[in-house]
Amino acid sequence: MRLLVIEDEKKMAGFLKKGLVESGYSVDTAASATAAETLASENEYDLIILDVMLPDSNGMDVARGLRSDGFKGPILMLTALSGTKDKVRGLDSGADDYLTKPFSFDELLARVRALLRRHDVGTESILRFSDLEMNLVTRQVTRAQNQITLTPKEFSLLEYLLRHPDRPISRTTISEHVWDVHFDTESNVIDVYVNMLRKKIDQPFKTKILHTVVGFGYVLREE
Image (tube, rainbow, N blue to C red; front, side, top):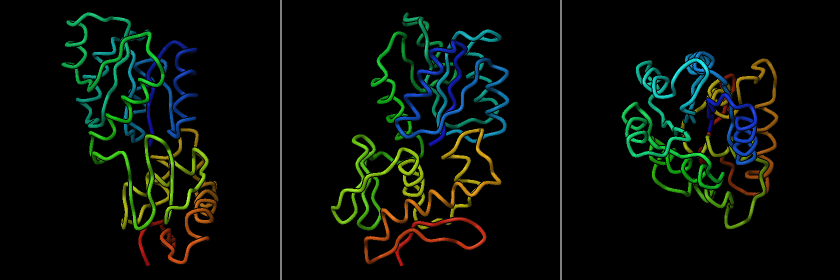
């Protein structure tokens, strides 16, 4: 899943990006409303984390602008303002949830997971396809009850495929959701990661479920 973090404090933005990437998310960051609007118009994000206090705009205005421009994904608003009226204003501006600073990263991560579950990605914490199972909370993956160890990027790639079973997915779409803004579309990184993933979830098993769609991309389906 690809996230956008809009936070002008460099240390906080770095902390959030590091933690989210380690948790398997692809993350872009923006330090201003202008930069955020540009990124949001050029890329497809599954969720946006938005700080209320930005150098060139109020986060609530940014949230309204994102909704006006058609962003339909969840927005998690971060702020030092803890009053009820402030929270109501944030939610009314288009945010889906409101987290007051300081906060624990574990709580932020739990809210991110909950928001993603609520917005067009199903209501379950466990994704299943055939005899393959992924637990999004414990981050455990099994196939035929055999434990499979994945890197964070392999996990993100498999999660996206599991959310769209039986649907051929292009390399471009995969890059938009699993990699960040710095991804080189001319590289063969996606093919490399798919091959690594295939060795773990397919090669040891009789039935193959991860298939190549020649000239297009990949699909998760039973033979």
